[in-house]
Length: 206
Image 1 (tube, rainbow, N blue to C red):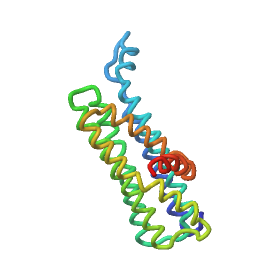
Image 2 (cartoon, one colour):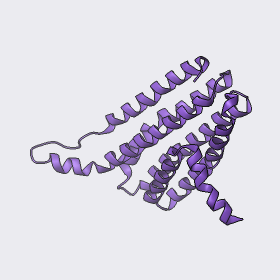
Image 3 (cartoon, one colour):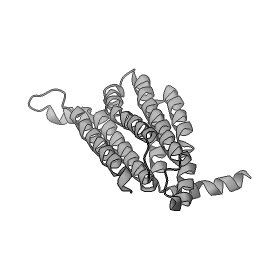
Image 4 (cartoon, rainbow, N blue to C red):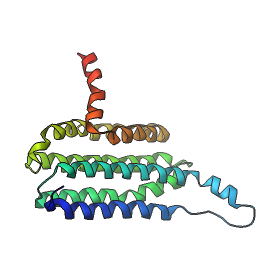
């Protein structure tokens, strides 16, 4: 990480940390009174599930942001704007998380899942815009060419896969969340591992 990008990274890490922290404020206990605490805690399971999912997703996005700026050595005005747009997407996450927790067990689970999945689709697009701009603008460390190629390969599938999640949410909210978890695991993998997983499939296709 260069001194030129250190301030960008420090500010970004603060946003990631505050976003994760703010989400826990939505974990409330509905109802009170003697003998009702245990049942109230159990009824709140959608809030725990939504918080855990979003905590993991934001953590994985932080990991990926760190990976990108390990290779980005120079800054520009456009990079600053694209990074701010990405951070805007990150800070929005607590809202669809709260909506999902509130409506997952109701008849409005579908629109809640659509909002949740749509948020991550937009973030995936913003991640790609940030990375592709950095590559094309020559902001990367010249020694990172091989690693950058693997990141580009891994990221190229992101928007499409999250768009598929958005479509699945129209059919089944739970299935879309399961697919989101699978994608999160894929993007948590180091790029060289993720790209190696796709090579056997490519060979079979030929």
